[in-house]
Amino acid sequence: MVRLPRYRTGESALDDAIASLLEQVGDIDDEDLIFELIVSAVRLARDRAERGDVKIANAALKEMRHAFSVFAPYRETRKAAIFGSARTRPDDPLYRQAVHIASDLADAGWMVITGAGPGIMEAGIEGAGPESSFGVSIRLPFETTTAQLFSDDPKLVSFRYFFTRKLMFVKESHGFVLLPGGFGTLDETFELLTLVQTGKAPPAPIVLLDTPGGTYWRSWVDFVSRELGLRGYLSPDDRSLVFVTDDPDAALDELTGFYRNFHSQRYVAGDLVLRLTEPPTQSLMERINDEFADIVELGSIEVAGPAGVEIGDHDVPDLPRVRFRFDRSSYARLRQLIDVLNSRA
Image 1 (cartoon, rainbow, N blue to C red):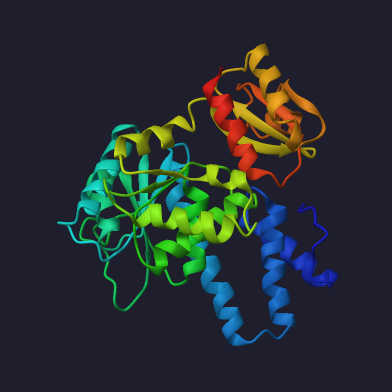
Image 2 (tube, rainbow, N blue to C red):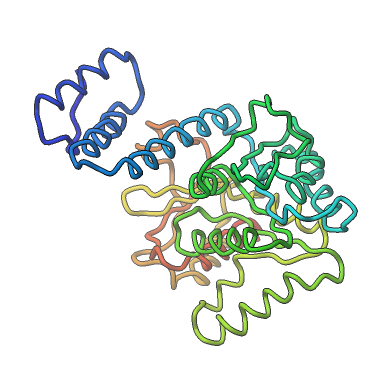
């Protein structure tokens, strides 16, 4: 029998009918959440939502469901999203930079995610190879899908909406490489930084990659420092959220080095838990408690074992952990804490 969650249609007969439908579907995971998805659809109908609004909700859900199923078999493989201009030509040095970093990532066992279009996107797929690439395309009348991916490649996902496409980029990526581009690239840059800065996306390495002597990202950093930093629109620590380089080898080190010891994070009973590959030494714990006391709301940063909920979810219970009451605002400082844990010194 389906256990009904609190979010319901408000009509017991309808709620019972939805529960009965789920029983007919059979053995499913997270039936409480599936129940609420159906309730939302019923409520849209009861609200007499405009057809245009229903079309947006319907298309977005269908796009997300398909994308989730495409990425699901590769969840254990780290992936890097590569952004940049669709107008970059193959003879542009930036194109070769994108090929270089994508090739290095594939050699390191990573996969890449690009927008599946021409320019930098095509360079990323060329470098990693189609077998190590995902294409997350947007349906635009003036942009075609790169020839590096065949239309029947199961790792090619086409989106109608930018917001669902961006969700997949951020949700499925463990690192990001941004090369120079136009409005779209800058939009992706600022949105990504906003999500990480506010904790709406987990901490991740963000590389701004240019060519030797290039001025694009240096000018961007100057603008951000001068017009945002000096006006107090940013925290001084926010600069640590990005790594600027013109060297693909340094970019690779930044991406892979972020996971040198850090594995993942999760909130448990209000505490932030950082899962690690190797346990921190006593001296390292003393150092981080001294340096990062400002981001701890209560108590201290402590070595911890897996919580019961992590064990129940089979959520890497074998890994060592540190746990603390994070203030949930100092995300740039959290990134700095992860860097120190990665140093293991």
